Length: 160
View 1 (cartoon, rainbow, N blue to C red):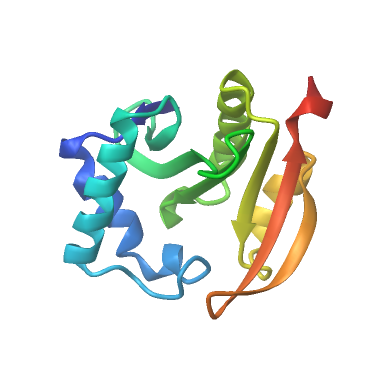
View 2: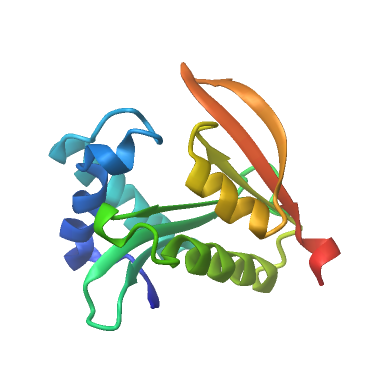
């Protein structure tokens, strides 16, 4: 599995994820229209230029894009960062989510991040399982901008 920061030619891979309702139903409960996706993608590319963390295209050995991953430090506290990932449905259940989470944890440690967190839909059993197997613990469940949300955290200083 290859992790490379998104670049301009990767929009189609990103759009394949955010325009897929199966992927988005437990993230935003809606797909992104192409123009909104392009705006977000441009913002991601801009962020990638200024940070060692960022937004990553995840591809298989054949080079085909299969997932998205992000590692974004908090603006107010750079010792905390959010991680996230989306995997195309045809790759679900093959261990990619676990591999991506493991890689993001290593990237966070290398970046000196002390606390890593993920925000999931509380009904997303697969993501919960991936995160709890990596020793994330649930710290909050409730309404997040009108959608159900749960925060799971991992103290990286304890893992070293």
